[in-house]
Amino acid sequence: MKTINRKYLLIIITCIVVVPSLFSLLIKENPEIQPINQNLVTNIKKTVDTSNWIEYSNSQLGFSIKTPPESYGAYRCSPRKAIFVPVKIYEDILNSVVYVAEEYYYSAYGYGSDNEGKCEKIIQSLKSLKEAESGAKAQKPFLGWKIIVNKVKDKEDVLKFIKENFGLQCIIQTEFLKENGNYELYIIGEKKESDPWYGDCSSGSNYKIIYSPDKQKMMTVVLGQEGTFQTNPEDHSTYQYYEDEMLKSFKFE
Image (tube, rainbow, N blue to C red; front, side, top):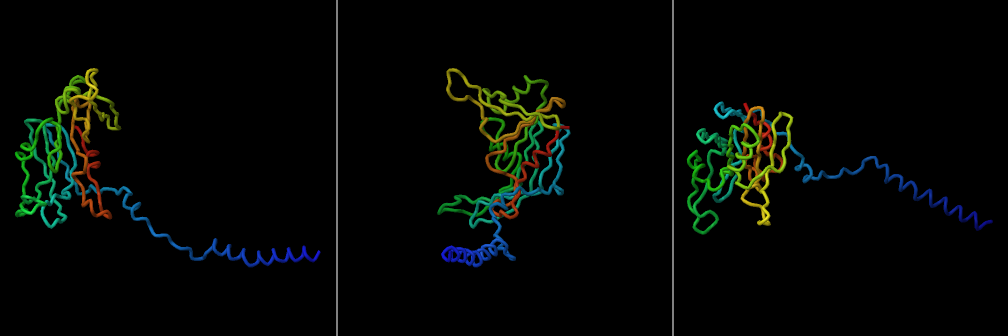
């Protein structure tokens, strides 16, 4: 009987000593504040302020788009530095094309080599943008976009437009109806039985094709694999990507 009482007494003493300590850990009056994971914070999508953006409207081609007043520019000289460059419109109405591009950039002959030369400011022009082109009509110019707008009557014209701009073996893979009544089209190279690979169709690029049955118009632009219009990508705390908002603002008129 005495042995049992001693066991109970030992259990009671243990509870008195240990339980309050555990309880105090669970209900700290001043719990530790965990540091914020900055990587997660910087990955949160920021709202782009477009209140100072410029709306460009082209009555001849029948469309409008909003563009930022400036964008992070290219400075290919040493030492490197961050610059911001005006965004400018270059019209080639005869070919149903409008370029949106950074007005200038800096470059040095032999950049990154022992013969690196003088840093030079190179001003872009419609001529320089066109001269840099080769191959398919739908392509991305240096530091800019090439927006092509055509009139189309029906799906036959739509496919003709795609083949002319992306390659003769292109076909429409999928099409998505948007809230504004326009269709976003995605293309792929037509697979031939004699050819295990996809044919002549530059569908691997990051592009946008928009078709409006009501307006009987199409637009295409090649965006490239990396953003062109943006803030300084090295400054994660303030970085903003402009291209989604630019595309959202595009309208047929």
